[in-house]
Image 1 (cartoon, rainbow, N blue to C red):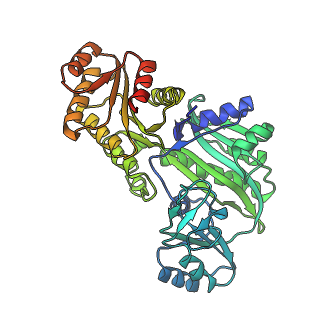
Image 2 (image 1 turned 120 degrees about the vertical axis):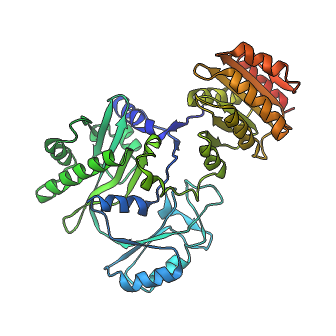
Image 3 (image 1 turned 30 degrees about the vertical axis):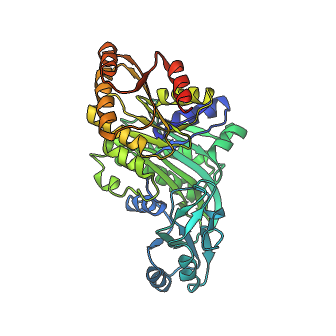
Length: 424
């Protein structure tokens, strides 16, 4: 069964897994993508301790940094949004998107084999992702690793801090294998995090002596940043201590509330679309949500839940979704036209299935949008439409009188059968 959820739901799924000892399988849908160096700069600007670093966009940058950036050891990290960089391989032949060296002269050589080359990891497409920036940082010896995340959790009705002394690994594995090593602390969003809560979390992470207060201070600053930037998640893994007795945020993932873009313009302007599917970026301009897949039946729906059900039933009848596009609840005719344009821009698409269950969506608007789209883009593949809900009678009349070869369906089951059959 296809499993797709927005990143804002990550917290509820994670906490459910913790409480019920279940594994998690999540495909996050992120609309704002920050590179590692951007997240670390944001944290540094808000008083959170991170390793020192510089950014190279060219070989000349790397040469200058290697001469002026005085550290005992360099860590050179390719900046892409996928995980597993350390075990990745470049098209240049270099193995590993994370390199260590104490020799400044090695820095430009490593950067040269990263910039402009594709890095393939377990989380990238098979062809890899082109590296356009490299972070050159201070290599820090990690004495101990823990896990810390702040999540906006629906079940708790506010922020929750999830912490574990078992850091440096996938938290899903920890939740499944050793759930007793995960702690959660709901935070009153009105009062904010208290000194007592921050200290209690630091103690559960096994920080001691002078490190206890350092950790508590960092936890408070991370929470304050979480609120300040309208984050839905701040995940620090590892949140650890160095051999010279400092608490440090070694790696970070930040996700933000898309609805807060009007308040967080400076952050959203940092959005990196270089690795995004151009169709996803195009769809977002029209307030549409697009996800590309590998099949040949395009799906237009209203709602993520309906999208999953639609794709599952297509699979059940032997079909394969090429993509799905969620038009949301306040869709207009022009958005339907743009949706069809984006859906059919995929050369793999051999049929289109529209499945709308109209509550707040007016089915008549969808129907008018569909007929206009078919005429404007001269649709050349079979179109199956299932509409149900508000103004469905008018909608069906619009489709029936359009003179277009639209295949109508009575329900989702009928629609999926007809969509798969139309491929033949």
